[in-house]
Length: 240
Ligand code: 3PY
Ligand code: MG
Image 1 (cartoon, rainbow, N blue to C red):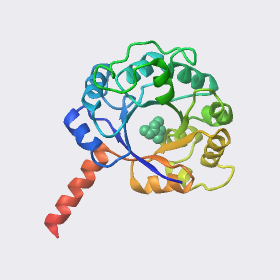
Image 2 (cartoon, protein in one colour):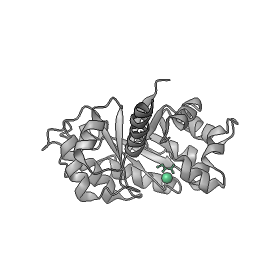
Image 3 (tube, helix red, strand yellow):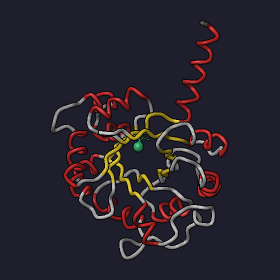
Image 4 (cartoon, rainbow, N blue to C red):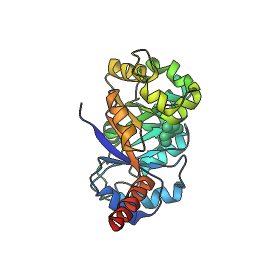
């Protein structure tokens, strides 16, 4: 199982994002749910990252076709759709991600203007990824049908909300290796349908825990986490 290591970002500072995009991560995820990335910022960030060596995904604020379209128009390689309550939400997210006849995305991309590579609806439909978050008990109940939904390319675990929804803690959720436990059910559903499986870690120890469950596509850290680790390392060096 080859791991794919991403970084979660909330900043709208394009210079910082460009540095992170050349730092060796496999992908960036811009957080428009909890971060200050609004539609205008997304447009500017998309233009700045058009030539960057690392693709970016956008975690959109909700199951929202307008936001999904805007993220893809700005050049995102895919979307991570949060707060999915069940298979109906997953179906809506999948339809919004692709142009007809596979979905109902509306035409209007900026990425070609900025030097992006996808120029036809067929190419875009091929290249794009729709990640559906499994972070509610409803999504977990429906995980098999969600994984089987046409156009859902991956299941993305949100351990913080999923543990809140299940009445447990992220630590307990990640430590649960029962084959019928929540994470095992997500991994098994993805494997049965041959789709991707990923998750938010936000710290290397949680990333290792996700990988130990067979979840290889992980947001290992965040822009804030990298800054905090850098501050600790520099001050540690000074004190050494
Ligand atoms: C979660 O763990 O709930 C997330 O959405 C991570 O950002
Ligand atoms: Mg969440």
